[in-house]
Length: 190
Image (cartoon, helix red, strand yellow):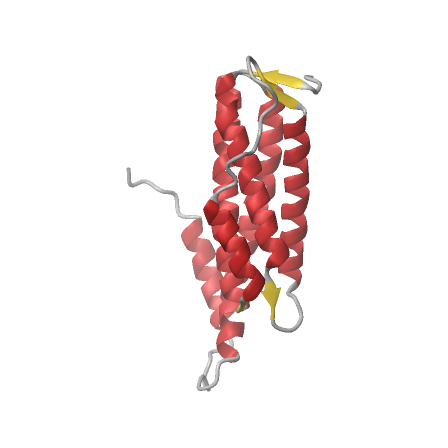
């Protein structure tokens, strides 16, 4: 078992920085999302999981240095993440739109953790691989939870729009079932 502080080869600089930067941007965006009325339980769970993951990533990052360089820094936090965070401060959204944005953000975080995990496996670093696997598990769970909640959120948002008189009350269950089936189809087209 590797203990911290940890000195890593230069090849970890970019993927580790991307993980930490993405975590910060997503956490800031979630902290500033606004809601009309009561906040859905799933949104609270996502915000808490993202915040915990950010703290874990920052703690790992603080205890890492790259060989031949000083401690890693997170200079480029990304304009897109900052812009998203600012928009979230001023715009209350329908629940389904917030989930859509969470889905995109969680997918980006999972991709970054996947890249870091692959780098760690390739360079045979168990400590980084374990850290990345933990982050990947967090975001895989959140993505799955969001996918399951999408249909109900869309139907709920539609029911609150004036002019929609006839909404199939079974639409959310039908859509959830069909979409989960589509996600489980193996990809064979390459």
